Amino acid sequence: MKQANAMTRREFLKASAGVAVGGALASLPIELFAHAQGSDKLRVGLIGCGGRGTGAAIDIIDAHPSVELYAMGDAFRDRLEGSLNALREELKDERKAQLNVGDRLFVGLDAYKHVIASGVDVVLLCTPPAFRPIHFREAILAGKHVFMEKPVAVCPAGARLMFQMGELATQKGLSVVAGTQRRHEPNYIETIQRIKDGAIGEIVAGACYWNQGGLWHVEKRPEWSDVEWQIRNWLYFTWLSGDFIVEQHIHNIDVMNWVLGAHPVRAMGMGGRQSRTEPHYGHIYDHFAVEFEYPNGVKVLSMCRQVDNCAILIGERVYGSKGTADPSGTITVGGTTWRYDGPKRSGYKQEHVALVRAIREGKPINETRAVTESTLAAIMGRMSAYTGKVVTWDFVMNQSKLNLLERAEKLEFGPMPVDEVAVPGKTPLV
Image (cartoon, rainbow, N blue to C red):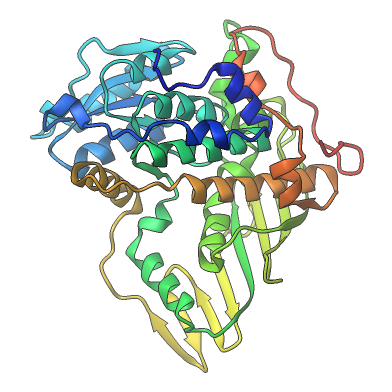
């Protein structure tokens, strides 16, 4: 699609490498995009038809009767067909008319372009994270509102591009909501507001955890190329998922950023690969521990693990000069504990309610910066653990040359060796 105000691909690749494009963005006209060409229907396109993408499609359909799923795309036909069948099964009731994809079903690595060009007003970006910056760029240039799953990048170059496109989305009056669903859960919202209002005094420290057992994996089939297998088994390759500290633990890091109202300025981490060593686990780690330092000197311990038969702990803790808090719903001061007892609403549902409301009421919301800061914080932690070095925010924002976007941009279904496992003290910080 050509647009009069679109930057060239070369300009955006330069932006992803850290070149400032503020002047170019400032020169673009502010545009407001009416949904569904002036009709009351809000047409949605799903890009990435795995389990989370299928769930997101149901969630946005449930957000308002005006929503209809209008187009779908995935790299693989079987994934698209499986998702469509699941949606047909789920939407047999009065929501059946909201499934209106017709023949707007697209397969291939370029399926996202066809979904975005199909006449949709909103796109759901639910592919493996490697492709998020590329798909987000395409959607924002085309003037589409966006729901995007977390994380939103796997390297500093991708995060820089997300920041740039987030600014452009604001200029265009577009709404963007991210899959950091805790920010839409009433218990977190009220508890964190109380913390910010001083309920536990001055915050002095924090901790966040996602320690659980292992997840699914996919064995390689003879008929699959290396690239196809890695995409289908995407959790276990850093270029696709960012490693699980980025793909999963971002939720807890995002809560700490939210509580502290800032992103970390430095990270010192460690980790390794002890239990998941078989080939189907790619090359990622199975445990991390990172100390994040925030601008006011507050330090946050971050710990995550995916190892079977080990202790499970998922959540956050905040320590203040007067007491402690669990941001999910409890505050303890002087032996007295307050517990959230308000309404319980699914963050998965509420994030789509918020997006649809913002579009329909013409009051844009944009969560790009917050989710990108949390993504980049998690990337800092991974880079520190992989290399054994202290990694600063200034380094990842302004100096790092790590660019995994190039692989995703040039991707074809062919051979691709598995990257080596990072070794602290030997793997260079770039």
